[in-house]
Image (tube, rainbow, N blue to C red; front, side, top):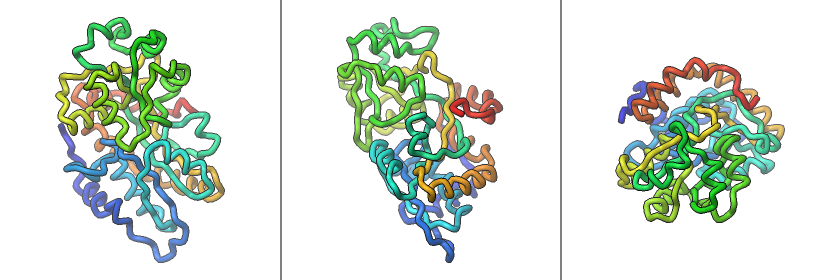
Length: 294
C-alpha cells in the first residue's frame, strides 16, 4: 500500500506529536480541546503508521495557524465525543459528518476534506447467501434490514450519512448490533469472522486497515457501497455551539481556506486500493462544489 506524503508534512506531523501537545503562543489563553477517535487511517493512535493519518497531519497545521489557543487533544469514542460537544465548554471534533440533529448543538466548518462513503463488508464465503441484497454492485441495506433474518454491525452514535442513518434508525433491534467501545470496528469485524454478524458498516479504507491489523486476509471480505447513498461524504470540523465555539469556528474556517486540499487529499488516497484511488482522483473536481448538506 502506498503511504507517501510530502516530507515536510510528515515532519510537521511528527513534530506535532499529538500526545505530547503542541508549542503554545505566549499570548494563548483559552484552551481548545480536540476530540479525536482511533479511526484508522484518518487518525492512527498506535502501530508503525502512528501519526500518519489524514487528521494526524491536519491538526498540527490547525494548531500552527491558531496560536491564540492552547491546544489539547483528548481521545474519546464516538459516544463520548458527542456527549462533550453537547456540553458548555469549548470542544471541537475534526472529523464530523453534518446531520440535522448534530447541527442543533454543533457549529460546523466549511468542508475540511472528502472521503469515500461508508459501505458494507460481507464475508466472501457468504456471497451466495447475500446475493439477493446485491444489486448492480451495490448493497440494498433496506432490503437486508427488512428481512429480519440477519445482523449488521455498526458503531454506536456514529453517523454513516443520511441514507444509511435513516435506514438504521428504523431497523428492528435484533437486526442491528451497536458497539460502544473504543475499538468498535475491530471488534465488529471479529464478531463477523466468528459468524455472529453477516455484515459490518464502515469506510472502505478503515475496514481495510483493521483487517490488515487483525490478520484477516483481504480476499476473505468483500466491500459494497450502499444503494441510494452518495459515493462521497464531506467531512467537517465541528465545535460545541457556545459563544467560544462560534468564535473559534470563524478562525478555523479562515485557516481551512489557506490549507491546500491537495495535501490532505494525497495523504488520504494513499490508503485506498488502486481502483478506488483512481476513481477518487478522477472525481476530485466535484468535491469542491457546495456540500449537499447545506
